Length: 217
Image (cartoon, rainbow, N blue to C red; front, side, top):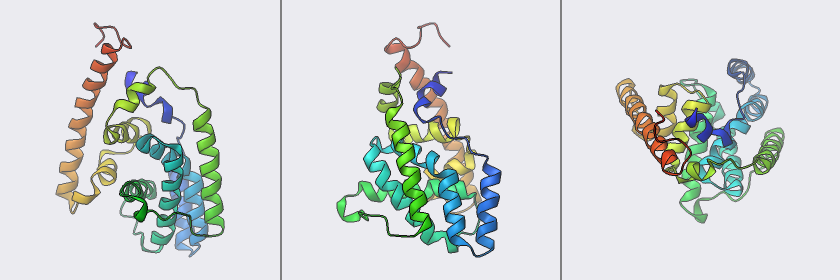
């Protein structure tokens, strides 16, 4: 229950994944890349943007990074090989875009290149999602969430809220070190251990600030 409350600020997005994946793939296989990209942004954009807000801790920065990731998705779409779900790939692109953004102004694209319907979908999702997030009441656990390491918060969101598999989480959080099935297995196992330690840390911090009784297990 406590961990669910810690990610409460991001618990808004539970899309029918199979329907979205099928629609994207059908459009791409038919050569309708604009349709596939638009479907991906409309289907997964809100949850990816919520993930970026939690990671970057800034609505404005998250909005800019989301635009970058959407552009990266569009440009990379012809070469996507479906070796993981499209949803997982979108998260990978978002995290990579955030890393570029953090490196400094010279790495930032500055604006979203006009891409017709794709651009309009990204702008619409960005506006609607950020408006909703800004108007949500801050819970008593907001400070506890903000004290977490960004990667730990990403791990909590991807596993507890987004329900990604451990292999998919490893693809998102450990992309640079995965080159084969064995490295994927090791990364997945390491992330499982990290989550167990994180659970313990969160409970200890919650007790320290009075959010949990000291006899709570």
